[in-house]
Amino acid sequence: MKAACLLLFVLFLQISTGQTTNIRITNPEAERVLKGDFDPADYAPATLVEHPEEVVDALVQTISPDTLRAYLEVMSSFGSRNTGSDTLSDNFGIGAARRWAYETFQAMSAANDNRLLVSYVQFDRLICGAAQHRNVLAILPGQGPKARELVLVEGHLDSRCADRCDTDCDAQGVEDNVSGSALVLELARTMAPLTFNRSIAFLLTTGEEQGLLGADAFAEYCVRENAKLQAVFNNDIIGGTICGSTASPPGCPGLNHIDSINVRIYSAGSTSSSKQLARFTKLQYQEMAAPQLSPSNEINIMTPEDRIGRGGDHIPFRERGFPAIRFTAANEHGDGDPSQAGYEDRQHTVEDVLGLDTDGDQLIDSFFIDFNYLARNTLINGNAIAMAAAGPSAPYDLMVEELGNELVVSFEDSLSYGNYRLFIRRSDGDQDQDSIIVLNRTTDTLRLPGVEVYFFSACAVDSNGIESLFTEEVQKIVFTSTAEIQMRQRGFELLQNRPNPFDEATTFGVYIHEPLPYREAFIQVTDMQGRELVRLPIELRPGINEVLYNYQHHRYQPGTYSYSLWVDGRRLATKRMIYAY
Ligand SMILES: [Zn+2]
Image (cartoon, rainbow, N blue to C red; front, side):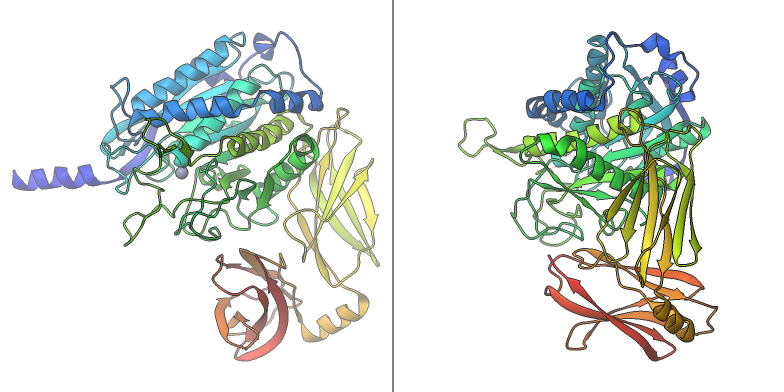
């Protein structure tokens, strides 16, 4: 008896056990759209808004800081949205919160000829003592031949306190993550009257705080049903502007620093479809929406997939091969680990609230969320989602070949759009494209200066001027003839780090000409006094070898540093780099 009680106790405490099973879409109509088994004419709009400028104008005019604030006030009122919290009460717990979100989507649908299909994504898994869970989903069906393709925007609805299975504490979780949930709702409201070629899914997940479990369930469903997911936009901690003292690296400048302009996009890889989605998002915003705003937000494309040691709901999608990015405010209030001594930040505590009543009149007058900043981040998402859902199909099979002193870039386009953009990124640039070449054919011949690593990608442009998603990048190293002779003699080239200058992370590269026998190789980073800061092991195979160096705000003085390639105890090459913030 005693042993049984103890066993039960241990089981109850376990955050999550077993596998996710019985993943299902509760609304059969929404399920048919996800499976591509539907007639788009059933969801045709009363009026068609087609031109990209009109779509962006509509979003600029309708995305509202006041509506976002209203969503924030309601969602923070449920006391807790812990994944294992109450599901029966009308005003406390995850059940009340998800029913409210479901009804809010339903009301948006009713206001738009029932074009928004609302559903739960239900799944079974033991999380914090609860066995069954529900994400909330709304789908806006696309129109025309690409309606089967899908663009997803998501934010996690669940919240937590220090103990991730404390289901009773007042976990309002406003920055983390009512902010992202409100953004998703506001996009559903403002996009429901519009029409796009592809379908758009608006998703509020649960179980994020116990291991990304709700997102994982939907990603698994998408694989199982062969959903044609083109792009995933995850929003998590997106409305706050105040820096805490423990924010996870790369972190922010220091306690109470305010930043209501910068927003970060995290994504895996450097040439990957996910990083290309980040670049697409930034370019679309700069070209379409930002010119209409004052101020506009500044998008920082980050090197790693997430803050160091942290994760989010974009990851289960990227792991299954879907391009996926995460938006996060530049300033976060804490690293989410309240168990550490002296933790005074708000993240993952009962302090993560909408704001404070400083004069005792029962009204919040000092806000931790900047509603205008959140509205601009909503527009960044909406602008990119609209273009991704409306635009042409991306080219494919991009190739770069050497022809004498020239490079020939070519790609395929099955639908013959006839207009393209070729992007070229240089190794020592930042994360954006350095040049954009407008083309009316699917090949181009270039002569580029060396020694450099260049990254090539392309997109198609339709008759409305909308760009497709970008191809993945192809990297090509270009040598001037003397540099090539030297490199062939040495057998290797230590490449310039990128980005350079850098402020949070940078990548070191070594190009190896022919197979090189060695026992041990590493990149050593030193300051200008020659003091070693770090050693990063690196493999040396023929081709380009890379190693990522994750840096931290204010850990070192800004200035010039150097890095060296060491092989079997010998320093073979040294280069300089600039750290700036
Ligand atoms: Zn979160």
